[in-house]
Image 1 (tube, rainbow, N blue to C red):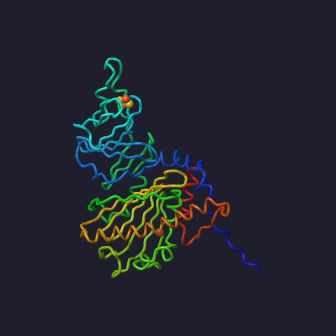
Image 2: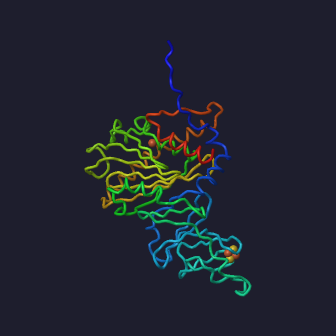
Image 3: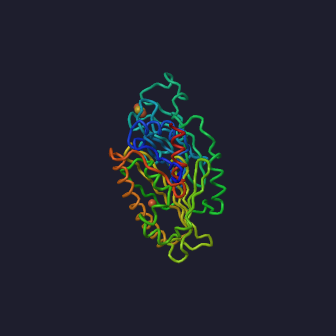
Length: 344
Ligand code: FES
Ligand SMILES: [Fe+2]
């Protein structure tokens, strides 16, 4: 008698990771419509401080205002698309490096060099602003003019994170990795713990793999694993558990006792992504900080090696699509369903 088996869950077909048409849809239908993490607000603590970045090829500036709020603008001059360069605004003015138009840090055009003020309406030529939210000391932006409510997702994240008092953690350092894999290969890899005993022997040594667990929520998921009280490189705590949040589309929070780390995964092109690690610590000794950064870097290199190999194989005619374990890889299914729904 034949035993009937449930059909396994299929992963996204390989061309979703290798064909430009999918990345274009992901940019317009996901990234340009989602709340994206820029980085810690501690980088711009004084009025006039500016943070220049490019996010999915959109040049932006976050500027600390006189009233200590933060505004974000496109780093694009309204004259003829020049950009602003300086790290800090000059006497609280942003000066275009092309023809020298000058804007105040709240985006108002003040001096349109080469034009008579009677020729143009200054108010119509303000810097184009981008929706900005500050949450737990982190800057988030949304390129959409009418973005989905920030709190709809982050209120739920906040409820789970409340015991960790993230606001007490201080920003230490950013480390960025350029990786030769599609951004979703990196996310798929992050979203399961099945590879930990094989790919990360050191991590496996400090984590009780049998306790590894994934919980799914709307638009985010949380993986967790119990840390070994004696071997863990992190501060000892009554709750010696590591938590790995994935907030769609591309934000990760890695929480271990005394350490909070955010990761931002940004597509550069269909075959490459950049991953920014921002490290935050809660009154942990310098020696411990260094140890943690080195430990994370080792794990990251192990993941990069795997992701780059997988990307090469996805480009081969020898693979079309894989299957997903409904026990160990439900986080991947959750993420891939989200991608399919957004761009399918
Ligand atoms: S493009 Fe900025 S001043 Fe001309
Ligand atoms: Fe990994």
